[in-house]
Image 1: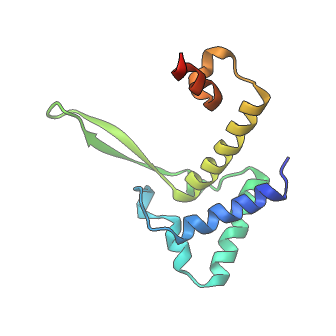
Image 2: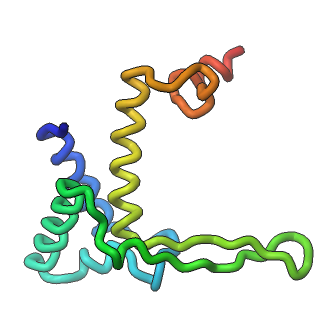
Length: 128
């Protein structure tokens, strides 16, 4: 279930994402900031596609591709993998995660053992 405020928030976050300076590394070097440099009709088309992804709850196959980059560890010769995700997927998942987290917190769905992951409980745990 979504309301007008959710869609306004989605639009607002979308415009911030396409008008920002690229920050984090993403798969194949693609960031949503590239979309912001295109003509308005392409931006509108991309926004429509992103909204359809939200409504249909289906991510396109191309957004599910990821790269693994080895990051060096302190010991010589040791590395750990870092996954680079597609920026469209990161945007959608970030928006959904924020929305679901707020719903989970307001409905009090997690048991007290998961208190470190809930904002309200984190504050209480820190004060103890």
